[in-house]
Length: 315
Length: 278
Image 1 (cartoon, rainbow over the protein chains, first blue to last red):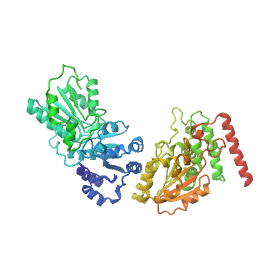
Image 2 (cartoon, one colour):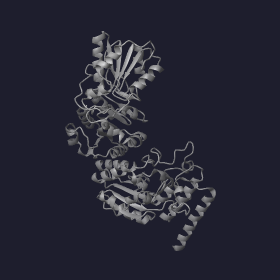
Image 3 (cartoon, helix red, strand yellow):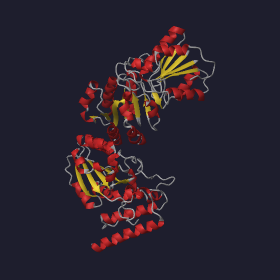
Image 4 (cartoon, rainbow over the protein chains, first blue to last red):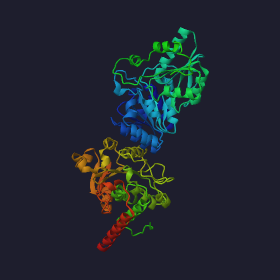
């Protein structure tokens, strides 16, 4: 995702002439080479000074540039939160905050580097658009969408080496619309970001274990959320799962739960998110997700377990 | 407010602005009077002497009031320049008004929304960076408060701006030695002196009387032009009205009808004394 972002931003710059890249001492190093070589004036490492990175981005945007402010997700939005809120969102400026390592991607770096509530925090800001692509191809599309947005964007990325999940997707990427990336009839899994890979693996396993047919939907645009599209899914499938690498509050689970109620959905809804706690564990990304209770086996087992009673919604 | 006289001095003009601010203060809406009085000469000098004017009255230069709570100083100048209307100022802070107690981007003449301290310098630096990259001959002026210098974000921007070579950035600090709860120099005494700290970050830093138009203008015009400039203007909070000067409660209080009359009399007396000296 990191390299795809860097390559795409170079493509965008060649076509639009108003891109500016600011980094706070974290950069997609090698892959930014072509951009830096061609636009040396429009790539600045401000140092470890995230508040000023966002302030500069706002000033640049007020002068007509389209800045991308890039660093590890926690530092691109939490450290300079008030600059994001006031300098960017209050002015409704086309600045994109790029957060690398969204969720708990940085699995050996500890809680200081985990952006596990970023969707909730960014979605709460007026004017903000929140994008979380699931694979490199969607990262390219989301970067282009951010470059065309009229206001602020938070672009939540993973890290590097993510597999392709969308080459055979039946739907194209359209900002603000959910995207079916795997066809199915009985169960639908809603997911976003890099954990969509786990959602796809769950789909395969449920099909193998139960014989049912499982769809996967990439909810790459968390704000504005495609409420109609999600309501359609809730009406269309017997079982809907939400798999998200985010705190249980203020992310996709909470919003889908509310939508299910509002739309009178009769499906079985099960939500799988990170736990509401900091975990003091280190290891692979999969290991940390497992510590939070998220694994292919666990989600599959829960999904295939008999529904408790027959309430219209069970969250 | 009477129309500006061609022979009007900066001191006359600022007295007229103070009277106008006092008039607005009688609307019953709580406004920051004393913070506007302390930065008035700095704001006035930027608009009338430092920003370049094109034929149509516009300017290639930009003003950002980082100490947004001093915005009455900016509003009265913008009214004088015909950018804001008298009706807009008269309705400040009332339902339906476009003007509040902090500058709001989108209002005529307001280039950035401020109010939360520590934001304006970074935004101004971004504007100056854009102008430098594009090769545009534009200058960005930004007025900060001394309490605002306590924000870490200001020092981040102070560190970054000279390294980016932003010689087109001019900051003026309203050094009135007061913050909401008391004297700034007593709140954090070890922060002083300031001028060497600013200079050590690579700024062209000058220390002047912040109520002296000539000194402010000379300090900015005399800058080296090779680095961003910061003018520390020593000022008096509530300047011009005896009972407001250096009295913290006037940070956010409007005078009563009686206090208003007294303030007007003091401004009148000061004008007469000055005329007699001349």
